[in-house]
Length: 141
Image (tube, rainbow, N blue to C red; front, side, top):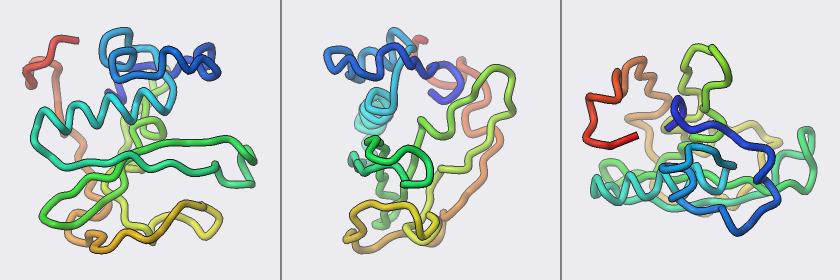
């Protein structure tokens, strides 16, 4: 998703189109659609996930909402933010927001921190070829 789906600032204020469908089929989206699309993929894989929302850090854009995912792996929860890990233009793929612990966020990041059992084992796992090619998965982009 981070490579194939592009962020579209034009739909940021359009609440009618913020669905998993727009992310996975139209490939043009905002954070809500990234998170819902990712959650749909996790549902298909049988991986428990949830949506989490918060205000963006005050140093960035005060009052702006953001949404990302929590995934449960081996009975532990991790943060995953496909929006923040998206590839812009010809950037190299980095997984800076992939399987993060609460403590991996800076003190300025604000969100509800009452989830128990946050994971350590897969924390900050950097997979350079998590899915190497579109053909490696059974999904029709």
